Amino acid sequence: MMRVRGALAAAAAYFAAVFACGFVLGVPRSLMLEPALGRLLAVLCELPAMLGLAWWICRAILRRVPLDAPGAALMGVAAFALLMVAEAMLSTLLGGRSLAAHWALYAEASHRLGLAGQLVFGAMPWIQVRAGLARSGAKPPR
Image (tube, rainbow, N blue to C red):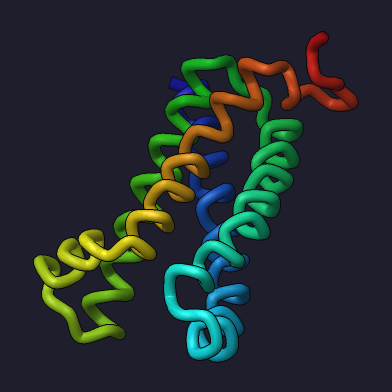
């Protein structure tokens, strides 16, 4: 039970930190990059920065909350679920869309690209633990 609570607490922290970064980076993407490049290229420009931040945040959390591979998988799945719920809530409450209209957005390439990035975000805790990168001072295995 303690392992589950630790994984869920880590998931909440991971989600909150990455979501905040996404909110901060999403404003310039929407206001500056999208008008100049279009939505797909704007997301393509933002995605590496978001994934880099998510990687760093995930590693920092896993160094404080050591998890085994199943715990890290739970952390990733829970963080991904929180992200999907938060995104749907923002889309419906602030965007004025129905839930069906929100899910229909995934027909657009830019949203599918974003979803792919979100899936990578969800996999990162497990990847880092399996690769041995979450330990303090750890280097990648050879």
